Length: 433
Image (cartoon, rainbow, N blue to C red; front, side, top):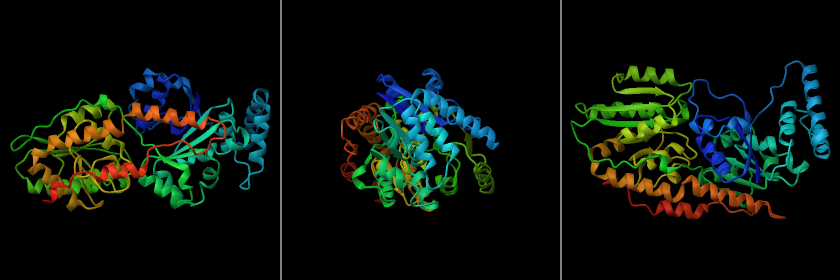
């Protein structure tokens, strides 16, 4: 199949799950093109697979629109002429579509459209709702292409903050909508999506990249390492994690306990000030960005994993932590109960509650005998439900089903009811005893 990926950036360091899909489909022999903004966060390490697969060969950057209106018109006219030579009727229909839009002619959207119609695709696969909007025009100009849009969570928040109708056209034209968790699916339905049109297809990881390390019980004076991997943004709740750690240090004043936070983002200075104010400079470290290999190594060296998110549509880092056999304390918000096995691989607390977070972490420190069982439960959960190889096989099946004549919204993703039932069968949280 010829598949177009439409996403935000090529390839954003925090979006390895998209990279896993791209390389997986290339390995399966499919032809891939990637349409995205050219920028990548400065200073972020480049994933080794970007170089291994030479993904720059597949990359078509979104155009930069000149501020000079005459230059903009000239460039747009020239590209339109080139497309007319290659695909005349599709180009004419595309131009007609954008000239007749109620909101007026939008140069950037039109130029992206000209890139997408350069050739015909079996599937145009859009990560995030706004990118689905960019490709929604295709159903009116090239009906052979199947349009699939994946919602991850922040795209839902955009609609709530800007306009609840921003995905109306996408909901009407997409052949299939996908969501990364049951929580995201319900939120997209609340925006107006047809429940029958949206299926759950979570992002996955390769568990073989995370050697399972059994963590034997530790007690004083053994050093204890706690790890968080998250962007330094408010919704990750890192300030609650730091405040919880202050309480942990007060509870265990004579234990050698450290807290490392890997990530990057605009809240770094504010978080460092909080660390200074709480007198934690010797035990809490903002490590900044790390390569995927360095994150895996740090997970292997750590004893406990904490994710104090306030909002978390899925939490791919929780999949990685479970694959590495780490006992987890996280918040019971959005997609996290779907990503973990509550009470077995992870202990969950309400979001924005440093006291509850500290209590669960302290319970794990006091009860290291449960660590091996939690690690084994997490690893088994990932192998059963989030192995990227199985998920990529399922994705190919979805795409092939969509290509069948007169097929729309008929491909099946993961059954949300079955998945939710699997997670609720977990054993009770022993930390409540």
